[in-house]
Image (cartoon, rainbow, N blue to C red; front, side, top):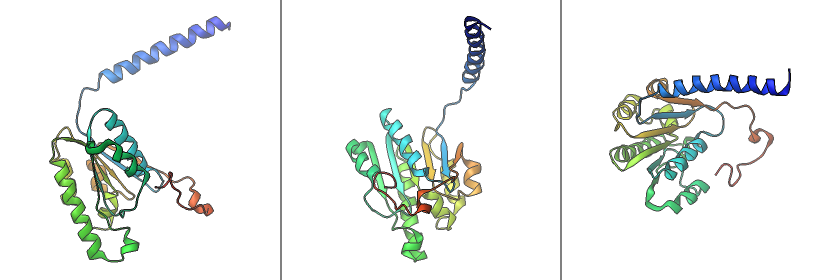
Length: 202
């Protein structure tokens, strides 16, 4: 086969593929706020949420962030977001991981405070994307009632996107979500003795 014939065959194949792809895209007509869940044992769940947040900032969205479980340590993402001022409403309301606090009542109280802030931000019509970082952990340990959380998320404003992160997403949340991505652990540097590093983990 000559090079020109090969090029023509490739062009015809790509034209057919484009026609199929264009028809598929044209068939999608629903526009709505999405409930997005990032879960799994692999690294990158919160990191992916920060990527979505940056994309939404670029589109002029006002963003809400509520962090469950994580303590108020200084992270690169929070320092960077400070440059956007009031465009991002950031609330770190955890008191550290459960193995650090070792106090269930305290963990439950912290989760309840964070959830109250999340509901407040969901009710704010200016917020278009809300990140509920590590909410899955609070749900996993039953610090919040899963039925109440799922019901509130399902009843959110039609134009509000919500991203929930954390391992071990509950089946009820997965069922309610529009998009679920599971980060699978293939290899992690911690196993080789590499500590958490600035700019990578925080």
